[in-house]
Length: 219
Image (cartoon, rainbow, N blue to C red; front, side, top):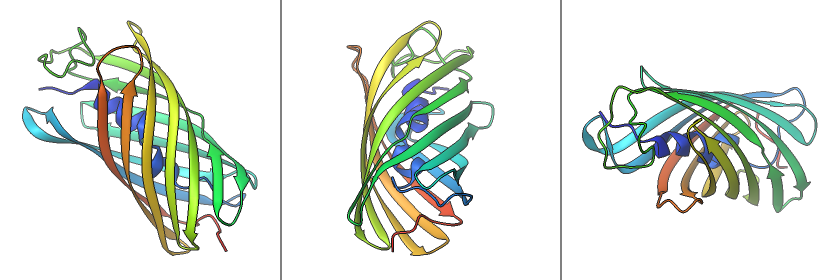
């Protein structure tokens, strides 16, 4: 079985467009449930070339008019477990454009991972467990094209460590949130992660986020 660490890292650190929603924060005291799925095509997973899906479940809660906290867990049975926490600061808000910073930290556990080269897609995996911790700082932009639609480009920098190795990375992405009602939103997106320490490691994924509960107000 092969399970590539970049794919896990991509899902935890790079899935910002579907994980955070738009830059605009929830009203104080409001809570929304978030379910996302990150898929990385063109990799070998469980012995088959195809896609590596990683589901995520989380919640977001409005703290103040411009601050929102989020928590999430990701998991595949017996393979991957991850927990993350973030704080979104909507420092700029206008009818047409919103901006936010969303610093996040997370940790994950990976089973059956070849620890000799975490970013080598060619090595066979062995029965080795691994732990990874990461921190990331994405900048989210929200282009509000309509009261029910927002385009969400984002970029960020991060750092991960496995204990044996530490490396910086950059993330880029583009999503679009559609809000058909005041209590539901859907947000597809594409994500790219690039390792910045000289290793040749770039991965892309697609994601889909579903937001159940109160939504930020755009009227």
